[in-house]
Length: 309
Length: 241
Image 1 (tube, rainbow over the protein chains, first blue to last red):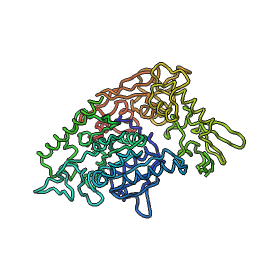
Image 2 (cartoon, each protein chain N blue to C red; image 1 turned 180 degrees about the vertical axis):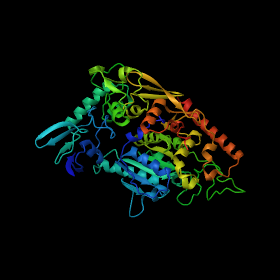
Image 3 (tube, helix red, strand yellow; image 1 turned 90 degrees about the horizontal axis):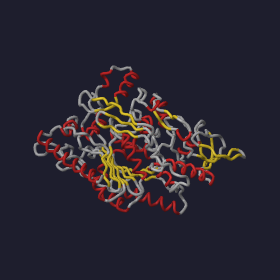
Image 4 (cartoon, helix red, strand yellow; image 1 turned 135 degrees about the vertical axis):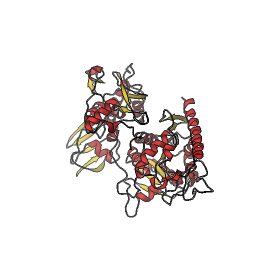
């Protein structure tokens, strides 16, 4: 499913919900993922957007790139506002003041707004079972405020608040497994995706918005500014993250795990780390340690998918 | 700009657009199976039927083929439309009783079973011809086509045999609305299963990392089409400079 046809880009919907001319950095993987995701969502949608890169680049007063109804919220209450929008629309439909029962509610947030600050609101929305899709664009840090660490930053990455040096290895904790937390809420649909695999991403988002009840999609999107890599490498790094097992692509439908892509064997992790400045200080021992941990996590996941076949 | 009315809503549309396009731009849902913007409209599935009033005349048309016109009145949810859609859906359901996409679509219209007898063989092709149209209009190979007539009509390679025509690109697999065409990559072999036959294609190995990345026939088609040297296509996506 992932190695789709070379002609697929020409068969995708032409509709663009995000107008060009926004202020994303060169090589931004997040805005690429957003474009792909909204091709799947279509026009009948309301977007709730947390503070973050995707909010500031697309809404420079008095302009906006959004061709959809759009609300800006704070870091912490994106999921809460989305729940409110959903409940409000439902009430209006019941009272006959709104005619379209299928309007999709899409909450969009970065990793900071999801894994750190917005986690309790997200947990509440998932637990209450609102019919919405929550998309987290994960670039592994607070990139637009100056590359601070978040709990989605991987172990060993150097950021401005976890600088590498004599005393510190960089980020000292492991990346928080948010898809895992979402699965633990027993919601109907959870998936991970990456804009380097556009067909897969679009299909997952389509599944997510069509799901009755809450759906959560975690999208791994490269950030040349924050990761310190060349701007033409965003897509390749996404692919390498998947092929090294750092960010496996899978979906969980009603608790059932399915791997979307299984590389025949995992690539060496240095393929992924070498082009990035944030990992430049890591010694061979540290890399080996990370590689072991990545493999353990990857095979744990693989086992989950295998045992439920 | 042309002004027309769809379900009581005044809608502006560019001349030359179809009723379906105008409706979709304004969030009015019309079900379809055989529509893709990349290829010309064909009108195969008949699920997009709507009722059109022009002057005193009222009739059913396929909205994917019917062009917008000034003062047109379109209804997408009248009893007549719902009835015909129901009939079409039940016929499709009888043809493809095992296709999850067809079942899902029928369910969204409130249809659980068909009044017609189900076909016995495991068939999920609705003969919408999206695959053959994409092969002709987008890929430019015309490798597959609809052969036979009536109940024997099916999608097939010429004489259901291995030919050089198909480059195994997989566009037909992607575009199929009901999952009737299947593709599987297994090591150096790509296997594509059409409703008529299964064929295997050899994959090309990356000169650097050794992974199989594209069918050999597709690569030679690309070489011919772009006019570049063959060496440019030796490496997979991750190994290219």
